Length: 422
Image (cartoon, rainbow, N blue to C red; front, side, top):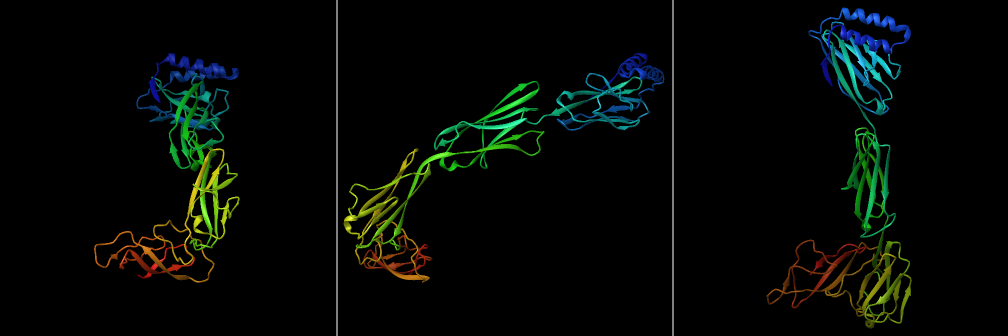
């Protein structure tokens, strides 16, 4: 917005008369010319009057409002001109044929006009003129905002492999001004690299994201979000990642239920393998030895009947897919038939809930303690066993490094047991 003082006297009147008469219909041309010339002779001075207006920002297709206002008006004539200096309104009369311009208010202190269905071609300076002596002029700038015409996201590869770096591109076309593009993987914001291309006052923005994918990214959306003053809220588009990964293997002991493998008992292990693509085959092997002759393999299941100590060893489940292979090991230790618990040096127990209605069961454990204090009768303030968790500090005394415990174990055996009698 700016204001200026124009040349005074008959030159201004003649110029105004010429512009208005040229734009008027033939029937009104002479009348308008005479009216302007007579008014020019009676133009009051501009002392004390002040013409002002405000810049306008509008979204394409919406309505712009232009207001020419006068402080301390003395009924001087107000006129509105377009960027080509064609008269839009002279007082309350519209010489211009563009019907998108409509009069909202006309008084001695304001000329207010609306412009509907604004397009990019309407952008520019509009002039308010006040016919005082000397004349005054002020201009308002209409800025048209254009939202992106289209928002597209493109992933270099529809299916990626874990550990691979892929390229993702997002394009926001034909906006004004240029858009700002932000990237998200799920809820985490990532940093991309944007390039701006300008054509005929319009901008196309392309943003590139280089993304290293992991198996946890499978099914996670990659979001391209656009911020633009013509877009309320945030405009966004997204693509879901499809990531292939090698199997994850887990061995589940389904029998015996108590987890203790004794001579003469049976052992059943189930191999669970998950990957993408899903492994079509899992295999069992015995590490560093042959599989027992009485072992039965059935798909993911390994069954060994009538266990004996020659069955001791490491049993491995292997699974593979097009991405890679993986395995999981189970160390088998066969106990005597009279054994009630495993030694502390042996691995952790794999427990499943037993079929019983009792809420708890009393068990006796012989626990091997790893170190002894320097006392005649050793006492131990802590017990290291996977089945035992003390609710309070426990001191256990014994003549050697073997400690007998009486414990209460909840049913089902998914929780730790508590010490009842050391």
